Image 1 (cartoon, rainbow, N blue to C red):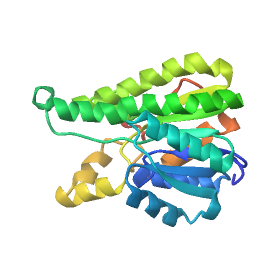
Image 2: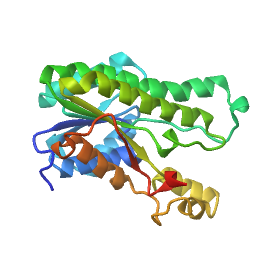
Image 3: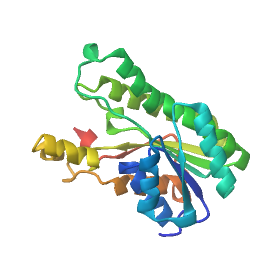
Image 4: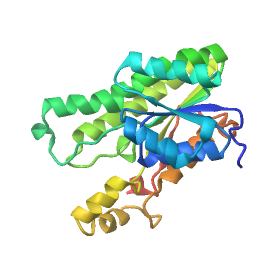
Length: 252
């Protein structure tokens, strides 16, 4: 359905690669115009080149941990396209491999600043514009690890659990005023990071594959398609939900 988001304006954070980059492309394919946001200018501009969108996309360097930076993104989006209909708050970082007592406090705080506080800041900047319009759809990226746990991932797991709670609270506060707020919970998605780990640790992907009953790892496009659905009128009665896009990972 190439016109699912015709006339809609979207923004995507963490759009410099992986899930974010592919989501930008899927949004464009479905008729949206897109603000591409990332803290890396090089990566963001590579996304613009990758999607080949012409005037239907622009890049804006954005630090999701800084409110003024994010307010600048929203202002630029509205200045360029007139409104903001769909916000995919996707920026996130990972830190893994250490049990809780061994995690440096600074690393924990950095991860929480991006993965959790960054989502709060993103919504804080997006919601006023959507309230002016009387409508909007916010889609936060959490993780299947937002409902289950994994050893060596205490910081990441806790940040993603927190995003789910924040999403539910925002949905209760704003759904009656036209803003739907939902969360996507990806399983393991085949991104350059996973491919690099597979090179460093042969058999890594095969190990992960066994944890996904559907028989494959996820693709960035799988998440992009979910964003399109949650951002469109096809999901008009959906808010406050946590949508698992995990190939069954969380079922065991």
